Structure formats: C-alpha cells, structure tokens
Length: 118
View 1: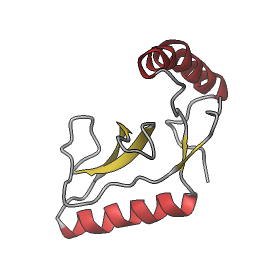
View 2: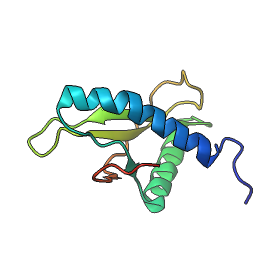
View 3: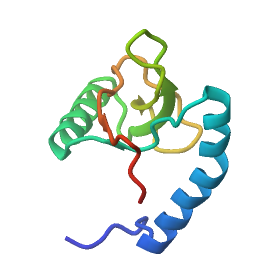
View 4: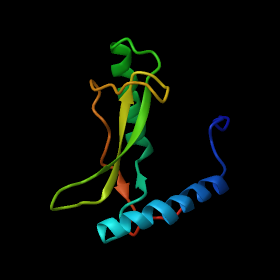
C-alpha cells in the first residue's frame, strides 16, 4: 500500500507537537493548576470498527462520503477533569460538513501519563 498523500513528516509532527506544548499546554497548566492529558491512543481495531460503523450507518442514511471530525473535550467528574478527544461522524468530508448526530461518537481511548512527547 502506498503512503497516503496527506501524511506529514516526522519532523513536521514533532514541530506541531512542540508548538502545542510550548503554547497551549503551558496555559492549560496555569489555568488547571496541573499538567493535562495531551495524547490519546486508540487501537487499530477500535478505529476500524468505528470507521466501519460510520460508513455503514451513513450509507443507510444516503450519505456517500462521510467524514470524521476530532473534537477536544474535558471530563467533569470526581474521577477526572482531564482532557479527552472524541471522534464524531459528519455528513461529508469537508471542514464545514454537518455533524451526523444519528451516529454515536467514539471516545474511551487511552492517554499516556505523564503525557507522551512525539
């Protein structure tokens, strides 16, 4: 299989992560008083299962080219107030596509602690 066209280099990924840590992570730590989660891992099986679910549910709804949007979130419970991400189906692949609220989002990945640097 060929590498997808939209892959970036490891160097670019490291720069993006470094920029985030040096700017946003600093401010989050100030606001929250502690380091927050900043990396999330999903198994390939979980991701494939979700993609298959999105594709099948979207097809049933007449959506031929769905997308998946990644959202930042934060828990608000006694167990955790840390950041999280969730993946939500959309009715198209463009940045302005509508969320498809008929497909439940994916969450419950794992986070490194302390956070993993790229």
